[in-house]
Length: 446
Image (tube, rainbow, N blue to C red; front, side):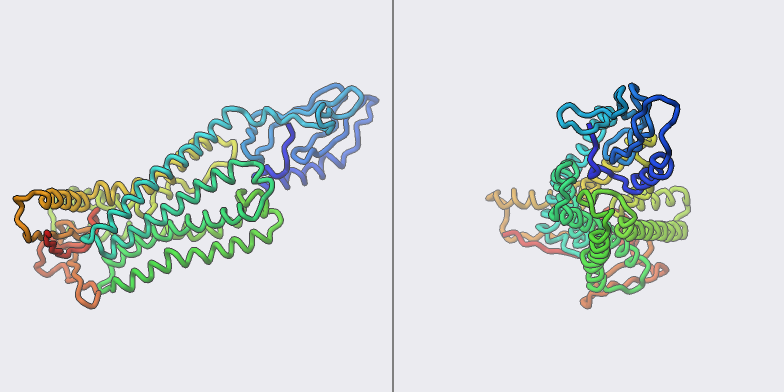
């Protein structure tokens, strides 16, 4: 088989190989030893030097071609008359790249795609249910849950776009070859939703850090800032990326699926957001450990509690991605393992977050159980009408540690008293899975 140039995945390596061929092979004279040779040639994909007639040349498959395995060989046959082999059906000079695309490599690629499909699909289902739960339970209507809903919605959008992208673009070589406008637009929209999801991860860390560190903070101001960061700011790098890539002749190929330096326009802000979230987490843990040690005797136990509490933030803030900073080059050892691991964490992150902060959250489970009990009570004719229940939602991050006391006033400000004051230990702001700041909600059974 021949390889069309549209299937090149690394144009930088491709251009280097073409330049090397022109300088070191094509410019050399044919051997003058009285024997017959096929001429040196560039077959649009690899460089072939002069080959003795009646023999077959071999070299490693190109690593800059999609799904090509550089550990096996391509081959090109020279006829006894000194001409290159021609394909019997097309009559064109032909290089055999059949072995480059081995079955195992194709199967590995398909397994990675399957993880993405199943992971995103499963995450989308859980995230949509979580958003419905957060929206329907009025006891959970607070700023923290609002942030969760926007983060979850960004995960849903990103998951849907990646499923469409993988199924319609990256797996269809004909679509990549045609490089039509719609697939480029899908590429940009997919990356926009991805950047938005990282922006909302940053908003989660920013809000939590501001709530703990800043003495007075207005919830309405914070949430407006988060709206801008989460949905509007990602438009800027995406517009810059789109403009530059559309005008770059080398990068404007294959529906923009190839990695280029322009990808750093999108990866840069994402990397910065992860680094800032890591800094937020470290500072939060430092504050917790400091306060814990000031009020508790068992430092080791309390340090473990603080670390355990902070670990809850890892999937919420996307800190697990810091463990996978660099992708191995195609054909390198560990590339497949890296692809499988990142596919799992990327696609299932929405499921992890929805499970931890919704389905396994004690507050949510308690509210659902109480609503179910209320429903059964209403159907019970013996249940007295007009009875009142009082429900108190726990503070997001409220545990028994005298760090700060968070309270809302009518102006929307969060005032926090110094920890030296004799505050009840149940009114302390630290890290946990709880959702809303303490508020009493009365319900009347009809």
